Every structure is written in C-alpha cells, then in structure tokens.
Image (tube, rainbow, N blue to C red):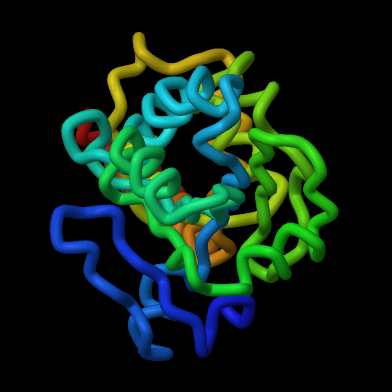
Length: 222
C-alpha cells in the first residue's frame, strides 16, 4: 500500500497544509495501516451529505478526544473536482487529519482508473499489503459507523498492541458479547506462551504447597 504513494506528495489537511514528500514521511504515516481512499467532488450533493458521516466515523477512530489510542487507519481524499477552488472548498469541511493529493497531480486520475471508480462518493478500503478490502464502503459506514473498522481489522489480521491493552483494562460492563472472541483472536503467540508458563508455574507452586500440608498432617502436626 505504501508503494502506491512513494515518490508522490501527500498534503495534510491542516492550516499549514504540510507536505509529506519523503519516503520516511510517507512510510511513517501509511505503513501497517488500513487505508481509505475517498473519491468525491464538490459538485456532488451525495458527497456533501456523506462528509459529516465520514468525519464522525474518522474522528471516533483517530481523534484523541474520542479514543485514547488512535487506530491504525489513514484516509486520503482523491479529488475528482473540476477546479482547485472546488477541491479546497470540499477539504474545508473534512477532518484535519485527512491527507490529499494536490489538484495538479495527475495521479488522482490514475487511481480513479486503477480502482474502477465510476460513482461518487466511493470509499475504497485497502489492507496494509495493498489488496482491496472493500471496493466501496460508503453504505457500510452509513449503516455500521466506526464498528466497520473492527471488521476490517479482523479481516486484515492487523494487531494493535494498544487494542489488546485496552481490552485487558476495559470495564467489563462496557464489553459486548463478541469481546471474548476478539480478545482471543488478537492475542499473540507470545502472549499465549506466557499465559501457559504462568499456569504451569502457578499450578506447580500450588501442588508443592498441598504436598507440604499432607506431609505435615502425616507427622501429626494437624
């Protein structure tokens, strides 16, 4: 997935519109992440309707005001606008952590052709290896909101250490019925080995204590 944007310039949708143009910068912000490519344009009424829904979806997964550990997720706006002014107007309504390609970059059209995008809005979801996870996730985002990411994460076998840490310390009353399954799925082999070792150590210790009690009884101590 990172390869799609190496040797390209990605721009951050912040006040300064900082440019990310080095391999280190691009890799740092895209590697080992699920990537959403939003194809949209300012002339599309459906795109304007979708923006607040997408913003809410994105901030609940990336904004520290909503989540302690931002998820491994990136969103890039691929403008299909007819002018730079239109692109700028649309970006003003989008979350500030969104990335985008400059209007003059012809790669926008190449990506549109590559993913066979015909309608807008379209959200193409890519796994960290660059394979397509969803050809268009717009309806899923409308219907399921930020819960979509859990399914994408599971399908991508993407493990977040912070995800497991949160699971261990979450309030039990806040957990859903599927949480035990997810906790088991996202445990690493190392975690499982540690757990087995702890049980063996604990069991051996308990066994020794029991033996000592029996021996003490036989001696007439109890």
